[in-house]
Image (tube, rainbow, N blue to C red):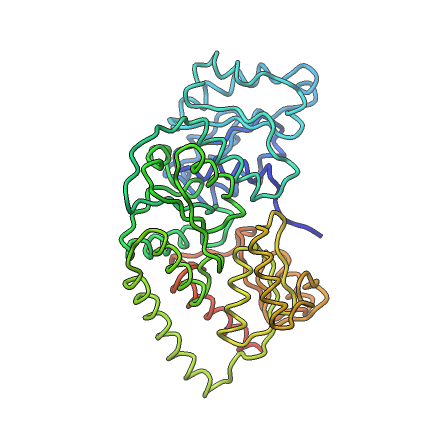
Length: 425
């Protein structure tokens, strides 16, 4: 069973990932319940706890993604009246950017949303997305939507400033997304780089407008940002950098990422590498003591399913650094072709090709990295001992400290999770 969200959810969360933007759904209430709750849960705004501000029609007590609650008559007569009613209401909320998104069913009605936006004097800050990529993977929907928003904003061609960068590929769907951005920003600052914006990853509209001052785009997750990077390059001549080792997951891939960025930007990687070395030394001292006291996770097995740019570095690092054996390696739909080929080549070199696309429900493992729903199912069935959530799917975990999967701090957190699982072994 595939439990991944689709391109429609990717479209909504791309809009909601802009700090002062709001997605407005033209569709039935059933389509907005989960994404509205998700956005408020994983990217709460300052006013999200003031529920009395959202008791009006179309919000139904939830602060995010108001909808026109279409019913059967609207599919016959059109959604004109509800669109006319909802637009003035959302205009009063003070958002810098709005996007009206048709649900799959509403896209068949044929209402001229752009005309309604013009009549409501909202066409200067509200765009219409009349047909989202409903059947595409989440990452494709996210990427296409961010590109469309940047194009609609008609960004100015500003002078590019050396040492300024944008971070591409971050989404609130990714586990610890804010902590990941903080860690990558820290590494950039250690290399003398200034992060201008993170499109779809918490930046506001003003920061998106300033993003054209960047001299380079750093792609962390190409699945979520290939089209966005192409837009910046074609329209503004801003090049992009992708580490051949994938996202900076683990010490080795992080070092490769630092060197790739430093080389492309002409910066000194030494301060960032020193920071990483400090984290690596701390891990070494812990590992050496654990090895003598309670054994080592060498030959412990793991299964993983996630974005290809995350799966590739995680697999290589766990195998080379800890001696763990992959038994099931899968990438979600919308994978990046280059990352998948690098992953398959790595597995082939180490005679592990049989684990590629193996079913984690059939092959037992000590640790499963992937979505939490599958992970809990594997735990309950005894197929794995512990699972590690890579995506924000369930909401039962509450964290008060910022965590990350990326960089040196992320490597230490992954080691915490691995050794906790091995302890149960």
